[in-house]
Image (cartoon, rainbow, N blue to C red; front, top):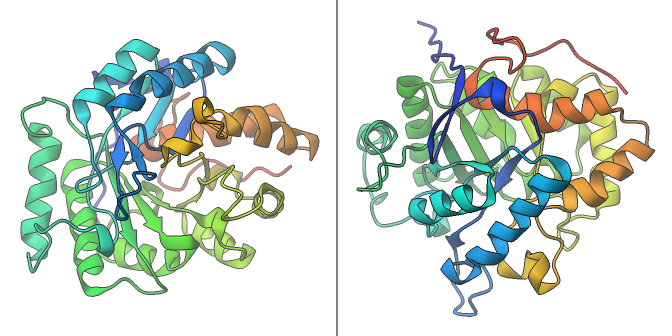
Length: 331
């Protein structure tokens, strides 16, 4: 039996439902505003309450300069998620924020994963999606970032991926993955879609770290989203390579499958600390894409219509369901 997640005409944000048609500016498809994934004691991979003013100021500036309309915040269980802080950032910056649920890849799994059955993990996610995160009343609007590392997920990662898919089918939310260094995305996709989850409700993460245009085309052709979501992280991949990979995917006719973001996951990436900041996509990378021939309609497609369609299963401008996405567009 084929499942069809409920299509939505509103994005579920930390402040409540937001009509998809009201998001007129760009969306950052994979970010972290508050997190703690420090395992060294150096506190580098942290964005805590002390960083809230800097994070809020950056988002407010991007709203003023580029019309930033929404941030998909993919900090999930075991990653230092703080829904109250997200609500505060959203209110003070004027930028809507979507909170997440799920589990990251195995080295960051909390004890609750253990030997828990897929059904138990699914129930945990469904309960949080339906009832809210703890006592905060904040309900997640996306499942992610669901992680794996290596070409194939480990056994615990496999359980988490399957639980994410079952929870997506039960609630109508979409699933965003973490594919470590871009590897294993096809295996993630096969596992998720094997449950009946439609590929257009799946985003395969960190594909800009994988220098493999054939894999990008394969994932996009399946109907899933290809996330180029670490833009500006030059220590992992040069933006010059990211742009070449993006242009190849656009030229192959898959502009309607692209998601873009910066994945700010350390306080050192903040502008206030000399980093590239959340605005690197808009201030540096997209101007380079324009110079390479990418027009404004394609920019809008990749930065607004695609992420909204990923979240809701509906076209933000027409409200129509999108089982297969929009028609391919080329540069």
